[in-house]
Image (cartoon, rainbow, N blue to C red; front, side, top):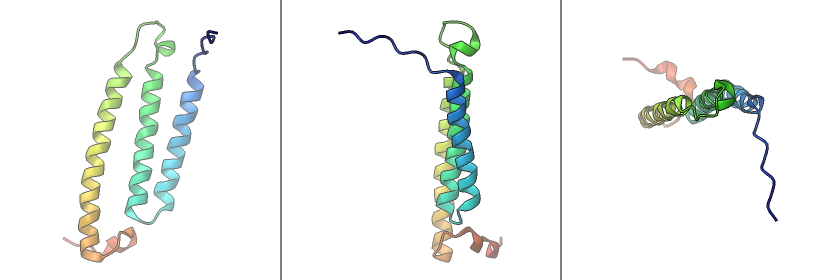
Length: 113
């Protein structure tokens, strides 16, 4: 028995997922006190932007049946940016932990230099 083809997912579903990811990321950045939690929130915000970029470049927005790869190319750049940001932030977190034996961002007011 052959299954019937699935209906395409509407644009509003993608935008809703992006909005939920964005709000979750902002909430995580505001609520968390340690650096790792804040970095997770930043990654969620970047992923929300990536979902929206890819959704807006889809064929039902562009008006043709041809694949629109602009959003996927920008998504790759966002992923590269997120990886570089995570590596740099992890290096900063390790240096901060080495100096203060904590990753609580409230102790950052003692930094000078």
